[in-house]
Length: 189
Image 1: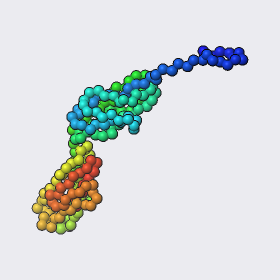
Image 2: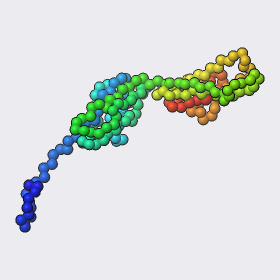
Image 3: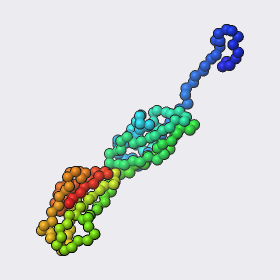
Image 4: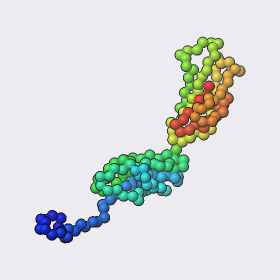
């Protein structure tokens, strides 16, 4: 009785029937997980701790037309996980393709040596910057930088030291050692 003509009397026969809102699950599949501590987050709010491979879904459900962003709130110990299909909009059904693939975390080191010059003459003193950077997804612990010198070097007068503030504590010397953080670097001179 949602429409009609007023006849000078109060209308008392309009009925509103409410039912449960139609909502949909957000989830996917996890593969490669061997550690604990993987925590996923939905739209910056509710979290879901995943402890095993297989399918998962958040407890919170979303209505049609609502956008979603799934992120990794905490990586599992010793592993690195990445998401596929992590963003989208709910469109008439459950979202079951926000997949998570996990692998063992690994450091990926690059070494750069720079003396700042195009050439060097015999007898000149040079400062060499030896930089080790880590573009991987795990801390590189106990990285050693070992110097090997040609006969052209005056090895008796070679000295090494770690530059302060270069990313992590390190020890100097020709056999310098450091822990290189993820996305960080360590430099010796």
